Length: 271
Image 1 (cartoon, one colour):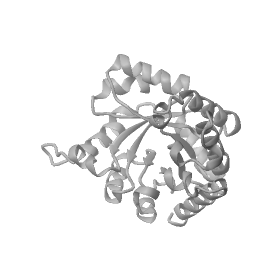
Image 2 (tube, helix red, strand yellow):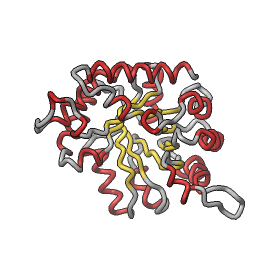
Image 3 (tube, one colour):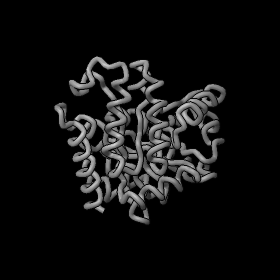
Image 4 (cartoon, one colour):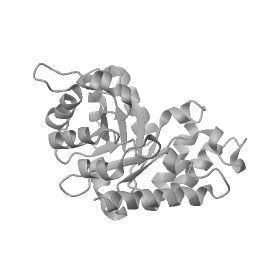
């Protein structure tokens, strides 16, 4: 089963477009995990277990693991998802972008080492840097398009001769030239709902990974209105810190589950 099929199945079976992001910060872990060598694994495993019923995907951010020398714990978490939640897509948030021979190694890292279903990539070095990921026909390639940070406008709003901003040019390339195997998706931030709508109009029913709700303040109703596809789905709406750190007390598991359920319900209410 290719990534987009797995994602469509997850949307249907979970009745959710919530993606739970794993951005583990040991300084924010509850007291019971402080000082443990396996704290990152145990924290994220618990988050996965309590939020999986409300999610359509899990998105580990690789920098939070590699900065703590915890890549082995990330591997173990991906295996945990594969064993216990095999229908839940794993999106490795790595934002890789490099020349072809290096990109081949990054693709192996994502798809062999971590067994991810999809990986985020940066397209700004051109198609040959994306091609090694696209050669994995069953895997998702999620391309940065209109990112949620304010500084994204520095480059993404540069206009071509016909007045088309760069982010829409990327969207058109992804939909019309790069998506030959139906495995592409785009990253579009919830902080810019008007741009979400413009991207959706360009790419049809292509999946969108949408960060920016929760801690970044993106508006859920505006995001859903702008980003739903023709089937009323089409989005992986990511929330990380607002779920992970919903409570720093002994009830952190219950609080994370409640935050995930409430976010899923808010998304569904806006459909």
